[in-house]
Length: 290
Image 1 (cartoon, rainbow, N blue to C red):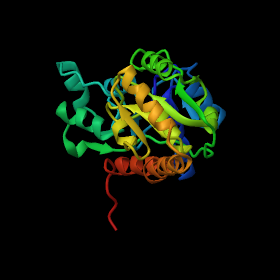
Image 2 (image 1 turned 180 degrees about the horizontal axis):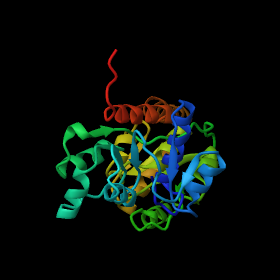
Image 3 (image 1 turned 120 degrees about the vertical axis):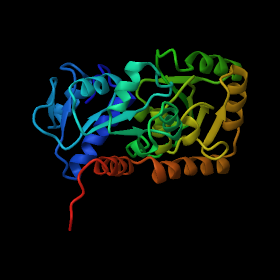
C-alpha cells in the first residue's frame, strides 16, 4: 500500500520489492492512487493493482507511507507491517500513539530511523532493520560532479550550488541519476535530514564516491575517507571537501570507487532487502509445525 502521487525514492523501493518478491513466487497486489506513476508502472509489468481497499484475506498488509499506514489502521487490516523511511521524530500525541500501537511490525530503513521508532516507545521486538536498496548499475568511469535535481526544501541544493561556485567546479544537477552516474566521478548529496538516502545507494551501486551531509542515515551508507566523505552543511566545508576528493590521484580514486561498489554489494542489494522483508513478514505468520 502506497499513496504517493510522485515517483520518488520510496515508490522506487516499492517497485524494487514487488519485482524481487515476484521472482521468489510471492503473490502480491498493490493498492495505490489511480494516476500514481507507481501504480501505472506496476500495472505495465503485470502486477495486480487497485485504488480501493484490498479485497480478500491476505497473509500480510504492508503500508509503505504515512497515509497508507493510517488507512490500514482505520480499516483494521492485520497483520500490518509499516515501512518507516523518514528521519523526523514520530509525533507523541494521543492519535499518533494509537496509530503506531496498532501496527504489528515496523521496517526501519536505517539504524537512525530505528532509534526514532524506539524513542517513540515502539517495542524493539516489533522493529526490523531492513535497509533500502539499489539495483546494480554499470560501473562509472567519467569525471563529472553531479547532484540530484530536486525542489525539496529539506535537501541542500542551495548549499551545493554555492559550494561548487566557491570551488570553481561545474556541478551538474541530474534528473536521471541512473543514466548520469555512468559519467560521474563524484555525487554530492546534501540534506538537512535523511532516513537513509536512495541517491547515495545508486551512486555506490555504480562505484561512485559520495560527498554527503553528516546527518541521519547517510552516515550509515558513506564511510568517511573510504567510500566518500561526510561533511557539515556549510558551503565552505563542502567546497573544501569537493576539492579534496577531486584532487585524489587515479590510484586513490580507483580504491574509493571499488570501496563504494563493495559497500553496495555487501549491504544494499535488492536481494538483501527482499530477504529482510520476508523475514519480518514471517515473524507475523503462524509457525508451521513439522
